[in-house]
Image (cartoon, rainbow, N blue to C red; front, side):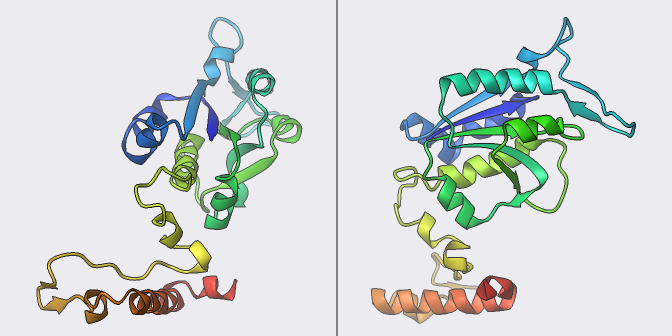
Length: 225
């Protein structure tokens, strides 16, 4: 999978992309992430990428010309399955959406900034608008990182255990069941005996029952879906 990101401050993403699971995914050649600096396409000597909004009001808006120019350049090089704008008023990211997007070959992410991007870019280029929750961030870079992480771990071969991602919370609309590790007893609390039984079928049944129980207690809305 190839993911391109358009960012005003690409340095914000560098550290995250160069560590842990995402770094291993890139080292294995399973994931390619390219972060493009929007200021390289800025206007004039000062590389201007933003301006005041028409109609007045606080906050700057990313100009259409630099964004349009870099998108046109990338579109000429790559056939994108989706051009995604990270924005609070987009579709809320869910595991099902992540599962679907992880099957694509090429994605282009636009990390918004300030008050957002000129509406005409959304109308002309954007094919999917995505939010990671009902709150506002200082920039779309954080949201882009969340989306890349959610997708990258689903690519076959990225995780050491191929089934790990399939048992995460929100797969099949269930929260993950409780998990335990050594020691067997800690401060008077013991690991459930079923997990020590070695009976795989019964352990799977227990985990499924516990997942349903935890979902009923904490996120009953998931069961309604």
